[in-house]
Image 1 (cartoon, rainbow, N blue to C red):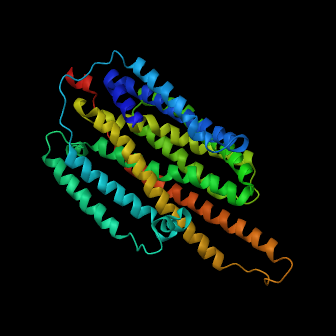
Image 2: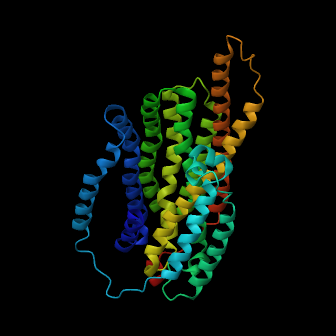
Image 3: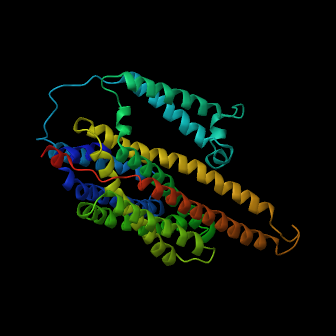
Length: 386
């Protein structure tokens, strides 16, 4: 909720030609938490207790509230209050919740998340929730077309840059979650068998990804100011695709933490470059009175991509793991070398399944490049007014 508000504040305070750098700074600051979060969390798990990850958020949240209150104290308040679109909010909530539950309760994902156990043995398939989601998405769309103050104005999607920017953000979210989830899985299942050791190593390795994201988010904002959205977005997506190709081709059971970290720097650099120009493309395409809505859709599209990527690509990974496992050629169970052979084979097929997912993610990024090509250069509002 905080990031869309921050995006909207930037949209109100800065002219279009100055927004990309501000978005880059916001992306860098946001990603700094990603840099220190995994390492800090790993240290808490190792030396204290996992509960401290939640306890420490309380004073940090209070500090954040105080800083935000002080920083926005002189911000102009709206003179008129628009009516809340309760029908739109209700239908969109039902649609999104239904879609996420259906995605997370696929047969493959439920095995990992134990969602089926939480639901009980008697619960049936939840695939019908896809239909519920579709019905409520259609209902939401029809409601929004008739509302005076809709949550999401369908007219926004008539703007080419808005639709293309949202599409790129969705696809980037879908592959970003693969990096954030599959890298720790790779460390835990292939490289490091100790739970605490895997937590520390995952935090260290992911810091290469997130530190690069923080740096290039700012650089991407500067580059966007000097050029425009499309070349920076496409450059970032190409670097991201190369990063996935490198990771998917080079990682195996013998890969070291240093190798993983520097190769993830490539991946993070690509993700970071995309942040500022994509945010700018979406927000700049919206009317001045809908900057908040546009900023919210920047986050919603990314989160929807995260949900779809987590379920879809993880389901593919588990499917490949099951197929590879069926083809194992192991000694007889009573053989003295059976256990060692089994552990080695499991590490090998796990590495193969996960690296194939990275390669698949590279292909998804290529699709994002195709979507980004739809972006067009338009005059700023200031130029249009002149």
